[in-house]
Image 1: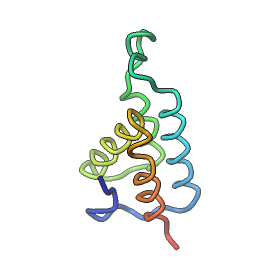
Image 2 (image 1 turned 135 degrees about the vertical axis):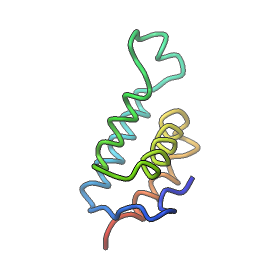
Image 3 (image 1 turned 90 degrees about the vertical axis):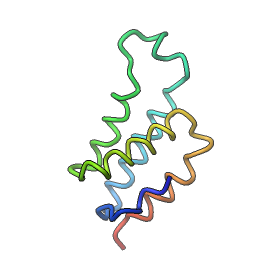
Image 4 (image 1 turned 90 degrees about the horizontal axis):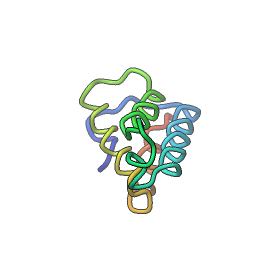
Amino acid sequence: MTLNNGGFTMLDRDTADNILFRAAVAAFKYYPTRATDELGYAIDEDIDWCVKAFGDIPWPQAQRLRRSIRDVITDPTTHREQFTRDINNLITR
């Protein structure tokens, strides 16, 4: 999924790095049985934490971002390269 379709707001380097950091931490800590092993854990909390780094963005963009972050967390080997590229493409130059 490409994030920069639909006119995402451009980011500064610090914000982009913060988003990538948060997604990486969430992906590193995730494993498929975490919700059953850790009572009260919900992947949506990790996704919320990652999306918060974007600040206020329109709902449709937030939804696309949430889906992309969920993919990165649950299967980072498949999605991390595209996600990193997408975030870096949003950096103002």
